[in-house]
Image (cartoon, rainbow over all chains, first blue to last red):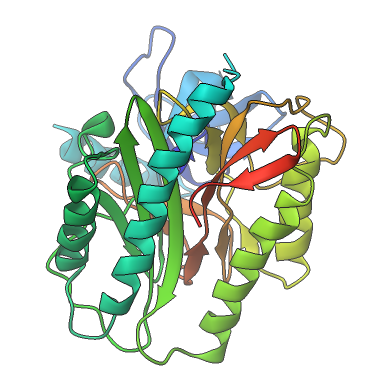
Length: 85
Length: 247
């Protein structure tokens, strides 16, 4: 049985925050800025022109979505949120 | 923590490994069009129980079945279901058995009836990539050499090497350290030592190497839905080199 290792986040991945005041919040990765950091936004509080910088290890990969603008990101996050409830 | 097994412990691992090998050999004739993956699961579970062992996967982290049965674009961790196998599909069967306190773990990809030449080649290359990696498994070698050999061989055929799923150490626990990626730099990683037991498992895709996990939290499939193959054996490092326990 294969062991799941940490998934390297890439642009378009939907992830949940594991650490910080935003723990549990869902984000979509919009840019990879270094080996440790990515830029994320949720299309609501955090918009594409004002993304949040998060450490990769403070995010857990959930799924991949094709979302790159505020509206589609917000929709993807809301859909995922609905599934999680 | 990487555990080094004594000769007595390795002897017990040989027993678990042999049961897994037997289960996989004996289920192969049943892999044909019209059979459901749940039936294959039952056949394998019966073989494991008849040998006085317990299926390692059942209940592991909440996994519901005795085997992982992954069809076509499912890379690993597919649930056995009422899905009927169709001619032309490829099915990966991953089996684990626990006896005398030790686990054995192995996987094979089988063709269902006649499959396309592309799928057949994928199965062959996946199997061969395991043996390419195995050439570097010996006391004193580095783990990165094994990973690099698997990656170099698979990528020479333009196949993708799954990054998110890795091989693992095995023994009293199903997943022990070290993690064994199927990609990496030669000369890097830990040094291998006599007494280590490893489950080396190349997971190779026909297209993009990226994968997604389904909402069940287990089923891992290729992002572009290209077929993928899996070949795994439990091996131990001895003073004479390497020994495969699950053939």
